[in-house]
Length: 252
Ligand code: 13P
Image 1 (cartoon, protein in one colour):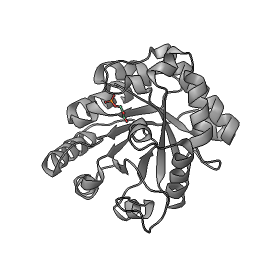
Image 2 (cartoon, protein in one colour):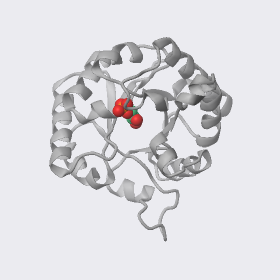
Image 3 (cartoon, protein in one colour):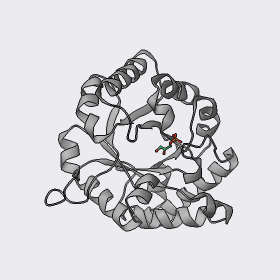
Image 4 (tube, protein in one colour):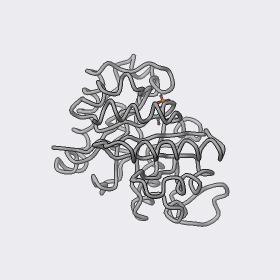
């Protein structure tokens, strides 16, 4: 099964307008000037979606947000709906990132509701899962990931509207990564769980990204694993050169 790799940048809560525009323009230029056998996605903060959309015009890079509310509209102060994201030109949204699960107490049930809302609006979801360091030490990684997949992924998710991102929490922003063998073991287990939930055909087509300290120097190894279909990149997506070098090393 050939799954085209997805190289996705999660800018998190970083960049004001000048910095964000420069970063988006540099990435767009580099993507245009190189031939990559992969798809690209950038997910700036809400405040920069319109600015970045303009900078990406004419490029094949998709635009995504980092969160969404499950309702279409209404009395939800401070929240953003999937219709609003679509209106701004977003094709993707990250949902259930561990930083939201921790900072905003998001549960699998809530993540699932958000994903349903995004899918109903025609937005592709990048649904994040991953274990804490403690869960890993207790040998619970696969159990935790299975349970997050079962709870967070809508029952009618398809390979077209859903991407999974496995992000071990202890690897995020730490410079630590699991071994390649560990990453492949977890990704294969995730695909098995997706098959149980959505059927084998869908599971085989669905992209599963790895995230957590992906850098230009480890991308080739991690992204060559059979069940790793791309990367969700935090810190290294804030430097155009690093972000592009990850793609160069892993997708050329
Ligand atoms: P880092 O690449 O900075 O470890 O972040 C990963 C991440 O959380 C992407 O969503």
